[in-house]
Image (tube, rainbow, N blue to C red; front, side):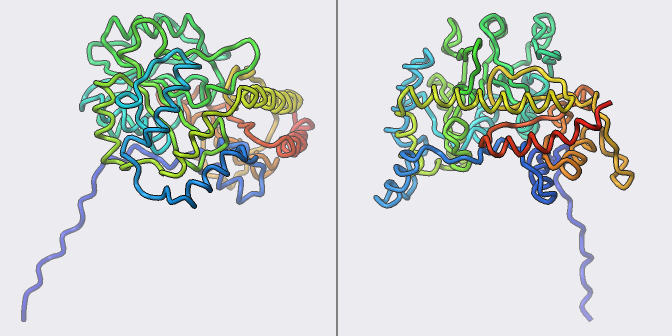
Length: 407
């Protein structure tokens, strides 16, 4: 009788052990299950510009359905470069300094992998968008956190300086900011720029919400400041401005010596972004100024509707300066935790469950945007108002259920 060799158990890698499922996507599923209005995920429920959709259909029917050049259609890269030259004060060569990616998330991952080595440090501002930390950990770099201080989420200059060390390679900046709605001002950006130049650090800016700005504030590209031309990677895309989050078309603008490295990673991660959607993106980037004026006006109305409903319900918050999110404090609201819910849930996670199941509005727990000081998010939840007015009116009606429960 043949003797069988013992079956050796599998040895699994530990790279993903620190990760958890996206809390934002988890809250969307919870909202769907509970029949709640989804104010969690930044997912517009209104249509994209018709001319952009028509351009995508034409591109598909015309046969633009194969791989594009890995770094993007030249015509689309030219359109991106023209936009930044016209609107943002950045001169970018479309041949060597614009890389088209599969969404901002892929752009960020490509940049971190391309511009850091194992053991380097990157600076993250807390609260932060949830992809940044896993990106850093997958790349084998060490994150160093600095706080955006409530209630206005300002930067402390001394804390900012203290975060820079000889091992710092990148600082990640998101402006307008998700989840707080903060727009970094000229003085803050100049402080970051000065430290990047002093320490030889590359700034990576996620500017996907650049066109969603409210009165009294303006978006400034860090890469347009003096001395930052050779050390800034500017990331943005079609998803938020044009309500095309599912298209996954974005770009990274960087000087050629940085782009060369970014392109190597991008090529092996995804090969190229969707070809017909790049072609349609040329139409999006050529929309008239009136489109952006209307966009800001419409978002201003949505913001007003939601903020009034939140105030009436007893939330405290800092009105967002840009983007379409509100971080709201629920500590003044009376509510009841269900004893059947896991005791391990933090306060904000339990409140989010209560909001979805008892109030009918899905939100995101605030602590999911923190790492070093998660307790700063335990009384916060994030609302998103990238919704039709009718959707927000329904959410406001449901939020009024909280008014009678105020402590």
